[in-house]
Length: 164
Image 1 (spheres, helix red, strand yellow):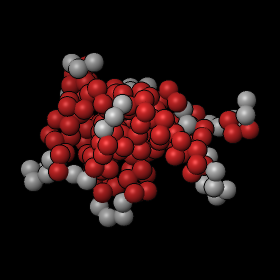
Image 2 (cartoon, rainbow, N blue to C red):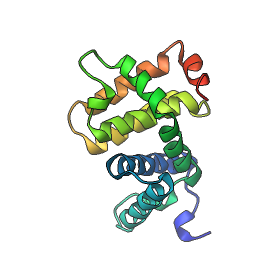
Image 3 (cartoon, rainbow, N blue to C red):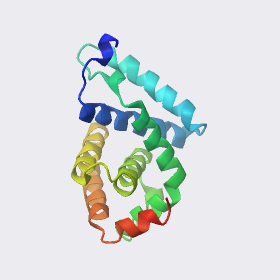
Image 4 (tube, rainbow, N blue to C red):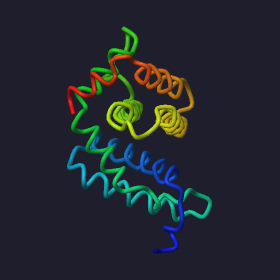
């Protein structure tokens, strides 16, 4: 085991994986390409970022979770967007949101819908934190509201199970 992969708590490894997955999804949104290539580029960016002495050690991300999030969002994007649109107000749609905000919502929604092994409050908090890292206005509040409503939806199991 390299010194970079010393005993890092699973929760931290998942937090970092979420950030890298959002970066990879953002790259796919802007430039297209293959998910595997976007994941590799996002991981490389994280490694360079993690070389800074005062920064979080991003090299300790959970690689299986990164792949699960990226492929999960890519493969279920249409269903996820439909569910987000149902929650957004009438004057908003997921397609009109800022790219990074849209991707953050998609990744959080994917976890809520398809990762029952992770507690919804943890998912919501993690994606609110990601939104806070990139936005300073009302975007983190929007992420919190949309994901919270999605998590509380009585038909969440029915909606997600029909597209597995």
